Length: 117
Image (tube, rainbow, N blue to C red; front, top):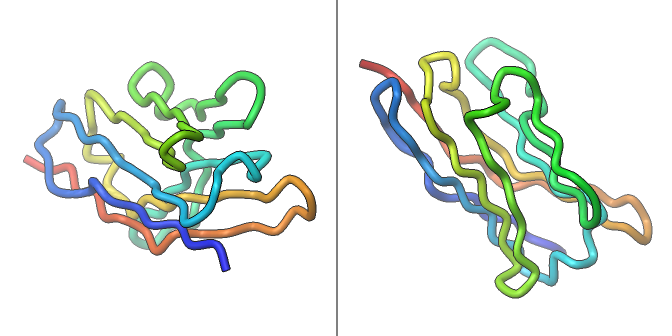
């Protein structure tokens, strides 16, 4: 069973930065797509950034220009650098991965990000 473990969340003031990590228990080369989602209190989980095995990363409008996601097969890790954080970025952030050969999807347990003054 593939495991994804997020880390790097925490408390930060508006305008601050955090760097999230998602460590996979197996080679991330098997994942066609990896992505970051978030879920704010009382809201549905939403897509934040998509990091395909090949091709360009895709960012959703609320985070464009502020967040940068990447993946590294050598370390089996996906990251997301979050800059210029806003209170509306407060959420639990989840790592998602979709396996290329069968479309199986995996989720991490989430890491909390709290942006507040």
